[in-house]
Image (cartoon, rainbow, N blue to C red; front, side, top):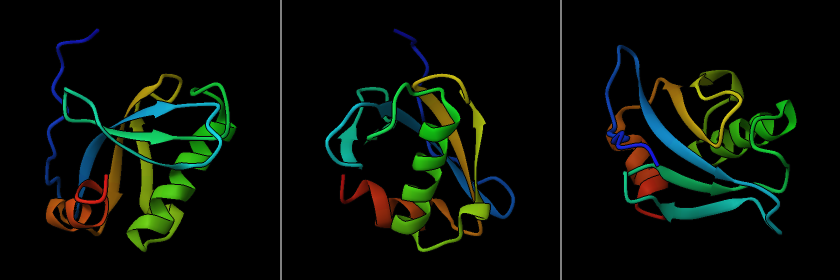
Length: 103
């Protein structure tokens, strides 16, 4: 297990967050946070690094955040379960209010 902490940042014009994907779920849903602070998301698609799973994650986050999927990009971990996702146009506070407080 990595010692990396997934802290929220406010890059120019948006925010970034760590996400841990759990695949083969019955429903696509928020599943809390990891000990490192990453958002856990359960996905129906499997495995985690496939284009289908990545698209499912981006589409799910876009709906939950109220933005288009074009505003969300997986910037690290494209082929892994642990990812870093960039959200254009939303602050860290916006993301936390819409995702983290519900997880």
